[in-house]
Image (cartoon, rainbow over the protein chains, first blue to last red):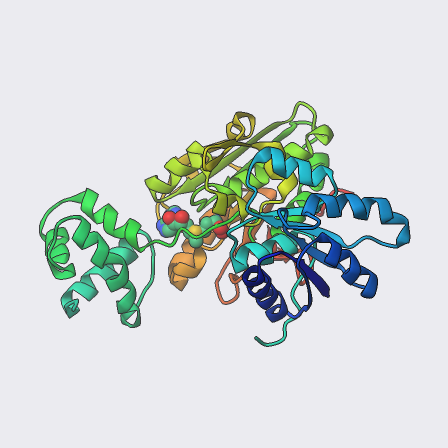
Length: 128
Length: 278
Ligand SMILES: C[S@@+](CC[C@H](N)C(=O)[O-])C[C@H]1O[C@@H](n2cnc3c(N)ncnc32)[C@H](O)[C@@H]1O
């Protein structure tokens, strides 16, 4: 599956991207929401977004808003929040704004795999 | 270095007390898990711990050795599939079958810190509209008192609640409390926890429609597996369902079960069980 990792931290993008590509996925990156929108336009077959909350230029919630508005432009990718925000109220907020799952940082490979499993997304075994 | 006598002694002790079947190739496991216990209890080495357990009738210390050697690894909705089958096949069948008694009894036979029984409780709570007024009880048992204590408290860390638990269930069934997440009391009330050693004769514990006995048989030798599985057969209702762990099978063990749910289905019915209700 094509996955877009949206996070302003380069090391998070690298770690998460590494885990996901080991699971057999193809990874794209964006530093903030605006760049994510451009990536989504360029690669309409991206099926999943791993989305940070706090980012410069356009944050995660603003991106969720923007994607809601542009919904008629085709099927929306699945969205998994991945953020240090760990308050129940924040989790509820993101889920009502259209996120499909929610990961709190720090996360492990098991957490990532199981969260994607909940959404029916499984790794393609590439022997790694 | 652990002495050969101590290795033999501990391997025997574990086999006898909890059924954990290790051989000498797992010596390192004894060392990595008992070394810290020895230090904590004030013994200079694992060999001193051995002497103390052997020479005194200190059952508490013996229990600590057994506890230190057990693996309590678990997670919510572990492997997902059994829980999907539970929700989509087994419970709908029971709703028809137990229509008159309106009762469902479930046993998690080695429940560790409670994630497994609570996952079942969450699925049942989500289906409650289909079972108005039903009397549903889940029993969770384990050999280790410490994990049962945590299970009863129903308090989990951020890491625990991220392992396998769908976020909508987190929102619906948990409250945040400082660094931790606490299960709602309605859900906690659905599950009762008791200490039980699967090596003991547990025919008294009642009859169940569903038994989860997951990720525990792998630690037993063939004879113990056979005994435990036979006894589980004895407490399962004629139409009952038994769930095992992802890497566990009854192949090569004389047992009263047949596989259900097709090739992928990891669950079992008693041989000669009545057909599902349509
Ligand atoms: C790996 S955990 C499995 C937990 C859960 N069933 C799951 O699949 O996630 C195994 C549990 O079995 C318990 N156990 C070990 N020996 C036992 C025995 N003889 N009787 C009952 N429980 C036992 C351990 O204390 C531990 O909590």
